[in-house]
Amino acid sequence: MAALDLSKLLALQETDSKRLALEQQLQGAPREIAAVEARIAAEKAAIETAKTEWHALESKKKLLEVEIKSAEDKAAKYRTQQLEVRKNDEYKALTHEIETTEATIGGFEEEELKVMYAIDEAKKRFAAAEAELKRNIAGHEGKIRTLREREGQLQAEHKEALAAVAAARPAVPPPQLKIYDRVAIKPGHPVCVTVNGGRCGGCHLKVPTHIEVMARTGAEIATCDQCGRVVYWAS
Image 1 (cartoon, rainbow, N blue to C red):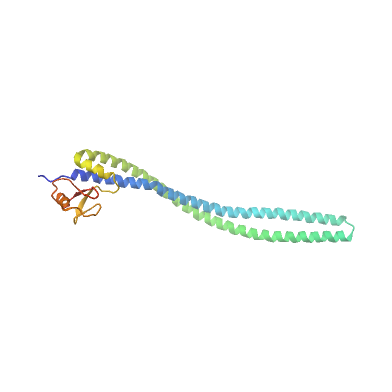
Image 2 (tube, rainbow, N blue to C red):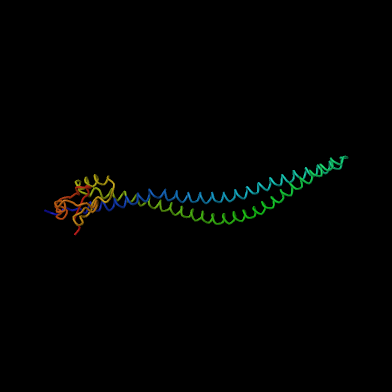
């Protein structure tokens, strides 16, 4: 009896394995791109955080300027009133208000100096962060372009792989193809595996002696009684 020819089945499996590998890569491509896009978003958020810190200090400085102007106007008003009063106690009261207001102005001006220093430091931090983060973003964007190009290549290769599988299927004897299709829908690949030391090369469990003999002689198709894979003897 002629030995069973599994060459067409193994050729189908080889093309089908390539198809599956490409599909796995295609499934992972969007996740890779999304991960890089998330890093870009994080870099941009970091730039905005640095800018927000700087702008918040600018806003605080403007508020202090308003407070200083308001206090200066109040002090000027008190001085004008001093020129108009006749009573000594009223004059003293206005003097006290002027001194209090001037002290308040001094506090505001001191705070303004601190804020101005903080603004300078924040500007420096922002400029440094922006330059570095923009470089990072440019690198991430370059990686996305590369990933998208690779995704396009994978799609083209996957199309070729589908065509190769379709071309290989008709050459496989129907009984072998039926077993292949039945096992291929289950998790795990390949479908056809060798017998190694009396164990299935797929599930790695011990196969019965008669299955090993069938695989060795190649008289008929042999399948693992545990996982259903086609087992064959590799000389």
